[in-house]
Length: 315
Ligand code: NAP
Image 1 (cartoon, helix red, strand yellow):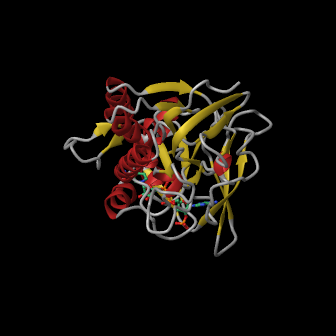
Image 2 (cartoon, rainbow, N blue to C red):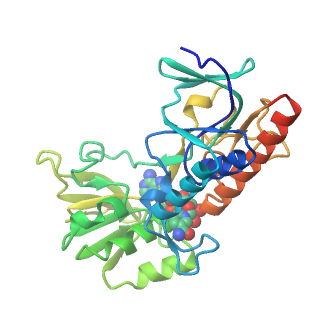
């Protein structure tokens, strides 16, 4: 069933980019409809303290920041609906967003679907994911591992942040990285490498999550990249923090994506696409900066572009 009248602007996603677009388009009296997927509030709701979002000298809780952005958008009239866009039809006006058996019509569309955690794909990871010992969110699950040994896989800021957060609960945190230095920013790397509860397991690639037969993680087998030696880390929890995969599938095609699956904006713009009235913003279109503040900036740009486009084309 189609909506009787097209929405002015439909924003897909409720992370920093989507909610910033919602604030701007709502303040412009466009009465935006915001489609909220499986992780309302986006990635920041699974992080702990955000220390680098401007305006918060003491840092801010990720969940609280997103809740505030949502309240701000709601105050200006943004409407929220839970749905999952499965595919789109951008060949005619209004644009069509298909959500299962429902079709939403939109004069302008802002896609801000973010990115999802990347997994290693090693044996045992899938079987023991979610409640059985493998997770991607220390903030959500860290407290379950009080006085236990855990492993974090990865070498970037996420891995360092997860490892540091887990030291609040775990007896010991192994930080497993496939190289001999962290990719994380210096401040985070220094904190992680000097923490007495964190053991760096350098040059090691995860091979298998142990414990499938028992239905709970009992260890992580890793292989040294130079010596080939196997080592089993006796952990009860494994936190995978190896980056993200952009959530662009339902929109590509028709929108073009690069080799990593990120949206490729139109030449000369960060947020315009080659399809008039369709914009992209945030981590689904940014493989370079991937910060909350840059996502918010892109959300603002997309909203202003959508507003101008609607003004010119009968919004
Ligand atoms: P990232 O920077 O892409 O790091 C991913 C890490 O996982 C890399 O060290 C990579 O190894 C490793 N890796 C990738 N695939 C792997 C595999 N299959 N097996 C084992 N290891 C694998 O991702 P991120 O840490 O999620 O950070 C993403 C962005 O968000 C960055 O720009 C980061 O600065 C930002 N961020 C900022 C903060 C903060 O400022 N508070 C917190 C979190 C994230 P290699 O090093 O060998 O490539």
